[in-house]
Image (cartoon, rainbow, N blue to C red; front, side, top):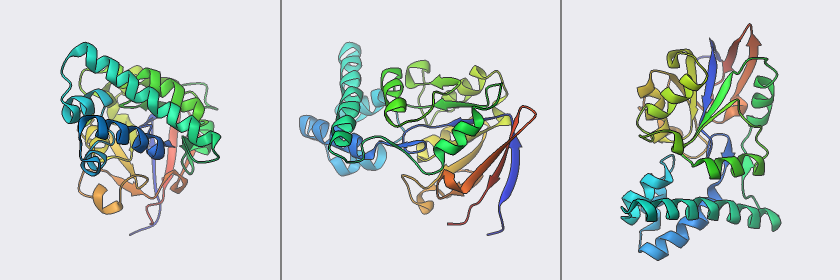
Length: 237
Protein backbone atom coordinates (compact mmCIF):
# COMPACT_ATOMS: atom_id res chain seq x y z
CA UNK A 1 0.00 0.00 0.00
CA UNK A 2 1.45 3.35 -1.05
CA UNK A 3 1.51 6.54 1.04
CA UNK A 4 -1.34 8.96 1.81
CA UNK A 5 -3.51 10.12 -1.10
CA UNK A 6 -4.43 13.77 -1.70
CA UNK A 7 -7.69 14.74 -3.40
CA UNK A 8 -9.98 17.77 -3.48
CA UNK A 9 -13.75 17.97 -3.93
CA UNK A 10 -16.58 20.46 -3.60
CA UNK A 11 -18.17 18.78 -0.57
CA UNK A 12 -18.32 15.74 1.69
CA UNK A 13 -21.46 13.68 2.28
CA UNK A 14 -21.35 11.78 5.57
CA UNK A 15 -23.43 8.88 6.77
CA UNK A 16 -24.32 9.25 10.46
CA UNK A 17 -24.58 6.09 12.59
CA UNK A 18 -21.33 4.13 12.47
CA UNK A 19 -19.55 6.87 10.52
CA UNK A 20 -19.86 10.00 12.66
CA UNK A 21 -21.21 8.47 15.86
CA UNK A 22 -21.31 5.08 17.53
CA UNK A 23 -24.85 4.05 18.46
CA UNK A 24 -24.16 0.30 18.62
CA UNK A 25 -25.01 -0.38 22.31
CA UNK A 26 -28.31 1.52 22.12
CA UNK A 27 -29.27 0.03 18.74
CA UNK A 28 -28.50 -3.51 19.88
CA UNK A 29 -30.57 -3.02 23.04
CA UNK A 30 -33.49 -1.82 20.91
CA UNK A 31 -33.18 -4.71 18.48
CA UNK A 32 -33.14 -7.14 21.42
CA UNK A 33 -36.59 -5.88 22.37
CA UNK A 34 -37.92 -6.18 18.80
CA UNK A 35 -36.29 -9.59 18.30
CA UNK A 36 -38.15 -10.90 21.33
CA UNK A 37 -41.39 -9.22 20.28
CA UNK A 38 -41.28 -10.59 16.71
CA UNK A 39 -39.36 -13.85 17.33
CA UNK A 40 -36.35 -12.81 15.25
CA UNK A 41 -32.83 -14.23 15.02
CA UNK A 42 -30.99 -11.29 16.57
CA UNK A 43 -27.63 -12.30 15.10
CA UNK A 44 -28.97 -12.30 11.55
CA UNK A 45 -30.77 -8.99 12.06
CA UNK A 46 -27.67 -7.24 13.41
CA UNK A 47 -25.51 -8.73 10.66
CA UNK A 48 -27.53 -7.18 7.83
CA UNK A 49 -29.60 -4.28 9.20
CA UNK A 50 -26.90 -1.66 9.65
CA UNK A 51 -27.15 1.32 7.30
CA UNK A 52 -30.70 0.45 6.19
CA UNK A 53 -33.71 2.65 6.96
CA UNK A 54 -35.65 1.56 10.04
CA UNK A 55 -38.86 1.54 8.02
CA UNK A 56 -37.27 -0.91 5.56
CA UNK A 57 -35.81 -3.06 8.33
CA UNK A 58 -39.14 -3.32 10.14
CA UNK A 59 -40.90 -4.16 6.90
CA UNK A 60 -38.33 -6.78 5.94
CA UNK A 61 -37.64 -8.34 9.35
CA UNK A 62 -40.87 -7.85 11.29
CA UNK A 63 -43.25 -8.21 8.36
CA UNK A 64 -45.01 -4.93 9.13
CA UNK A 65 -46.86 -3.72 6.03
CA UNK A 66 -49.69 -1.54 7.35
CA UNK A 67 -48.55 2.06 6.72
CA UNK A 68 -49.86 3.43 10.03
CA UNK A 69 -48.39 0.58 12.08
CA UNK A 70 -45.12 0.89 10.18
CA UNK A 71 -44.93 4.61 10.91
CA UNK A 72 -45.72 4.09 14.60
CA UNK A 73 -43.25 1.22 15.06
CA UNK A 74 -40.52 3.16 13.26
CA UNK A 75 -41.03 6.10 15.61
CA UNK A 76 -41.06 3.73 18.58
CA UNK A 77 -37.85 2.00 17.46
CA UNK A 78 -35.86 5.19 16.99
CA UNK A 79 -37.22 6.81 20.16
CA UNK A 80 -36.10 3.71 22.06
CA UNK A 81 -32.55 4.13 20.71
CA UNK A 82 -32.33 7.66 22.11
CA UNK A 83 -33.86 6.56 25.43
CA UNK A 84 -31.45 3.63 25.70
CA UNK A 85 -28.50 5.87 24.82
CA UNK A 86 -29.36 8.43 27.48
CA UNK A 87 -29.82 5.70 30.10
CA UNK A 88 -26.42 4.24 29.21
CA UNK A 89 -24.80 7.68 29.40
CA UNK A 90 -26.45 8.35 32.76
CA UNK A 91 -24.87 5.11 33.99
CA UNK A 92 -21.46 6.28 32.82
CA UNK A 93 -21.43 4.03 29.75
CA UNK A 94 -21.25 4.78 26.02
CA UNK A 95 -24.65 5.58 24.57
CA UNK A 96 -24.20 7.83 21.54
CA UNK A 97 -20.62 9.04 21.14
CA UNK A 98 -18.67 10.67 18.31
CA UNK A 99 -16.11 8.46 16.59
CA UNK A 100 -12.36 9.23 16.30
CA UNK A 101 -11.43 12.24 14.17
CA UNK A 102 -15.02 13.30 13.55
CA UNK A 103 -15.30 16.46 15.64
CA UNK A 104 -12.03 17.96 14.34
CA UNK A 105 -13.05 17.45 10.71
CA UNK A 106 -16.57 18.82 11.12
CA UNK A 107 -15.48 21.88 13.07
CA UNK A 108 -12.90 22.61 10.35
CA UNK A 109 -15.54 22.29 7.62
CA UNK A 110 -17.85 24.61 9.56
CA UNK A 111 -15.30 27.43 9.43
CA UNK A 112 -16.17 27.87 5.74
CA UNK A 113 -18.60 30.60 4.73
CA UNK A 114 -20.18 28.24 2.19
CA UNK A 115 -21.61 24.79 2.99
CA UNK A 116 -19.05 22.06 2.44
CA UNK A 117 -20.78 19.04 3.95
CA UNK A 118 -24.05 17.30 4.60
CA UNK A 119 -25.24 14.31 6.56
CA UNK A 120 -27.11 11.65 4.59
CA UNK A 121 -28.59 9.12 7.00
CA UNK A 122 -31.07 6.27 6.81
CA UNK A 123 -32.49 7.41 10.16
CA UNK A 124 -35.65 9.47 10.49
CA UNK A 125 -35.50 13.20 11.10
CA UNK A 126 -36.80 12.75 14.66
CA UNK A 127 -33.99 10.34 15.55
CA UNK A 128 -31.22 12.19 13.71
CA UNK A 129 -32.17 15.54 15.25
CA UNK A 130 -31.92 14.01 18.73
CA UNK A 131 -28.88 11.78 18.11
CA UNK A 132 -26.56 14.50 16.80
CA UNK A 133 -26.61 16.77 19.88
CA UNK A 134 -26.60 13.74 22.19
CA UNK A 135 -23.32 12.64 20.60
CA UNK A 136 -21.95 16.19 20.46
CA UNK A 137 -21.98 16.33 16.66
CA UNK A 138 -22.31 19.85 15.18
CA UNK A 139 -25.38 20.61 13.12
CA UNK A 140 -24.68 20.06 9.40
CA UNK A 141 -25.48 22.66 6.73
CA UNK A 142 -27.89 20.10 5.26
CA UNK A 143 -29.42 17.01 6.87
CA UNK A 144 -30.93 14.38 4.59
CA UNK A 145 -32.81 11.63 6.43
CA UNK A 146 -34.77 8.55 5.48
CA UNK A 147 -37.88 10.75 5.50
CA UNK A 148 -36.54 12.75 2.55
CA UNK A 149 -36.21 9.91 0.04
CA UNK A 150 -38.43 7.33 -1.57
CA UNK A 151 -35.66 4.74 -1.85
CA UNK A 152 -33.24 4.04 0.97
CA UNK A 153 -29.65 2.82 0.78
CA UNK A 154 -28.25 0.86 -1.08
CA UNK A 155 -30.25 2.78 -3.71
CA UNK A 156 -28.30 5.85 -4.95
CA UNK A 157 -31.16 8.28 -4.27
CA UNK A 158 -30.05 9.39 -0.77
CA UNK A 159 -26.65 10.66 -1.92
CA UNK A 160 -28.05 12.19 -5.09
CA UNK A 161 -30.53 14.10 -2.91
CA UNK A 162 -27.69 15.08 -0.54
CA UNK A 163 -25.62 16.59 -3.34
CA UNK A 164 -28.67 18.36 -4.78
CA UNK A 165 -29.39 19.91 -1.35
CA UNK A 166 -25.93 21.51 -1.53
CA UNK A 167 -26.58 22.49 -5.16
CA UNK A 168 -23.56 20.59 -6.46
CA UNK A 169 -22.84 17.67 -8.77
CA UNK A 170 -22.68 14.40 -6.82
CA UNK A 171 -19.62 13.46 -8.87
CA UNK A 172 -17.78 16.36 -7.21
CA UNK A 173 -18.40 14.94 -3.74
CA UNK A 174 -16.90 12.24 -1.58
CA UNK A 175 -19.25 10.00 0.37
CA UNK A 176 -18.02 8.77 3.77
CA UNK A 177 -19.66 5.52 4.85
CA UNK A 178 -19.19 2.57 7.19
CA UNK A 179 -21.81 0.06 6.04
CA UNK A 180 -21.87 -2.04 2.87
CA UNK A 181 -25.35 -0.76 1.97
CA UNK A 182 -24.14 2.83 2.27
CA UNK A 183 -20.95 2.20 0.30
CA UNK A 184 -23.04 0.71 -2.49
CA UNK A 185 -25.38 3.71 -2.37
CA UNK A 186 -22.51 6.17 -2.66
CA UNK A 187 -20.83 4.27 -5.48
CA UNK A 188 -24.10 3.96 -7.40
CA UNK A 189 -24.74 7.70 -7.05
CA UNK A 190 -21.54 8.49 -8.96
CA UNK A 191 -19.60 9.83 -5.98
CA UNK A 192 -16.23 8.57 -4.83
CA UNK A 193 -16.45 6.78 -1.51
CA UNK A 194 -14.31 6.57 1.61
CA UNK A 195 -15.25 3.47 3.64
CA UNK A 196 -14.42 3.51 7.35
CA UNK A 197 -13.76 0.31 9.33
CA UNK A 198 -15.82 1.51 12.29
CA UNK A 199 -18.64 -1.05 12.14
CA UNK A 200 -17.35 -3.58 9.60
CA UNK A 201 -13.96 -5.13 8.93
CA UNK A 202 -11.74 -4.04 6.09
CA UNK A 203 -12.39 -7.40 4.44
CA UNK A 204 -16.15 -6.85 4.58
CA UNK A 205 -15.77 -3.47 2.88
CA UNK A 206 -13.46 -4.59 0.10
CA UNK A 207 -14.88 -5.23 -3.36
CA UNK A 208 -17.86 -2.88 -2.93
CA UNK A 209 -16.44 -0.08 -5.06
CA UNK A 210 -15.06 2.28 -2.40
CA UNK A 211 -12.12 4.31 -3.68
CA UNK A 212 -10.45 4.34 -0.25
CA UNK A 213 -10.77 2.27 2.94
CA UNK A 214 -9.56 3.80 6.22
CA UNK A 215 -9.54 2.67 9.83
CA UNK A 216 -11.57 5.72 10.92
CA UNK A 217 -11.73 9.46 10.31
CA UNK A 218 -8.61 10.12 12.35
CA UNK A 219 -6.84 8.86 9.21
CA UNK A 220 -8.14 11.85 7.22
CA UNK A 221 -7.10 15.49 7.42
CA UNK A 222 -8.92 18.31 5.65
CA UNK A 223 -7.91 21.74 4.42
CA UNK A 224 -10.19 24.41 2.96
CA UNK A 225 -9.18 25.77 -0.45
CA UNK A 226 -11.29 28.45 -2.18
CA UNK A 227 -14.65 26.80 -1.62
CA UNK A 228 -13.31 23.28 -1.96
CA UNK A 229 -12.09 20.63 0.46
CA UNK A 230 -8.63 19.14 0.20
CA UNK A 231 -8.29 15.74 1.86
CA UNK A 232 -5.21 13.76 2.78
CA UNK A 233 -6.26 10.12 3.16
CA UNK A 234 -4.12 7.54 4.95
CA UNK A 235 -5.25 3.99 4.18
CA UNK A 236 -2.72 2.24 6.41
CA UNK A 237 -4.48 -0.09 8.91
